Image (cartoon, rainbow, N blue to C red; front, side, top):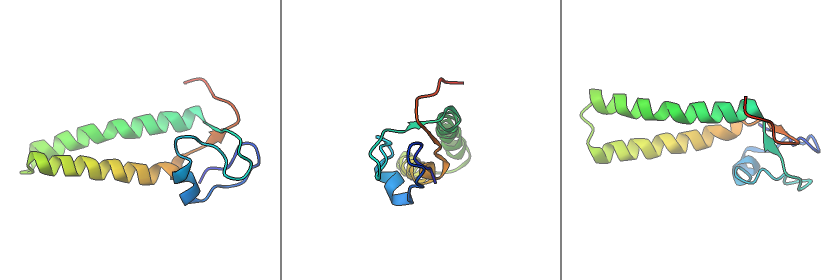
Length: 96
């Protein structure tokens, strides 16, 4: 779970889900930023879902509707896992 870069308080899972897009600390109220490592991990993990969906579609008998539900399910799983992988910093780091 991420820790606030300003007050060093570890966020709870539900707090992280609520602050996922603003990244504002629920205690001190200061804005946090994703580390470059965390941004890279989020980008790479989201890119992995498309090949998985394509491979499942190629080698299974799922219909288009089934694939849509599979895609939605994978998206929800990624949203549930994302708070566990966040690392925060006080200022925005360059991509790298």
